[in-house]
Length: 171
Ligand SMILES: [Zn+2]
Image 1 (tube, helix red, strand yellow):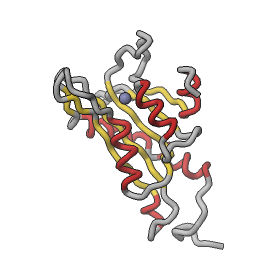
Image 2 (tube, helix red, strand yellow):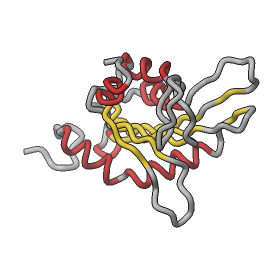
Image 3 (cartoon, rainbow, N blue to C red):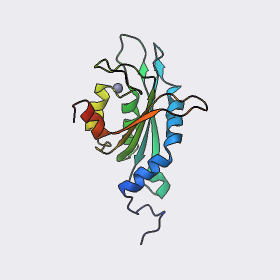
Image 4 (cartoon, rainbow, N blue to C red):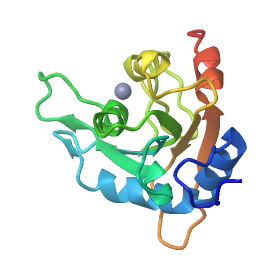
């Protein structure tokens, strides 16, 4: 039997999920810290953290790593860059092969249907990007959270990618 810390030990989906939830509070605060570096001409800031996995790392701890993204919109007339694809593409660029979970933080704003949810949902472009992205799985967990306040409970919603796409009729 392979040692628990062997980089070759198979890691089940259950274990990946468990690790994601164990680190969730930290991931939310890290995404919030990333958000403080976001750049928006109208001060609409979004931070994202992707908890990624790879099978071929040299040591066990390196099989799990977090990557961050922020939104950038320099001027009103310039193309916006969202936080989610930045985080996902960073993970992919570093050789990671799977997104276990994704945390997205921003002030809620109306989606393209004019609906205001409890938390900020990924925009249509990002949802379709995630649908086709090689790191994403239907079961990848997507946590959308409100910017946390010191000493206040963190408000968040949880979906899988599959559930989110279904909710928007994009599955
Ligand atoms: Zn987006």
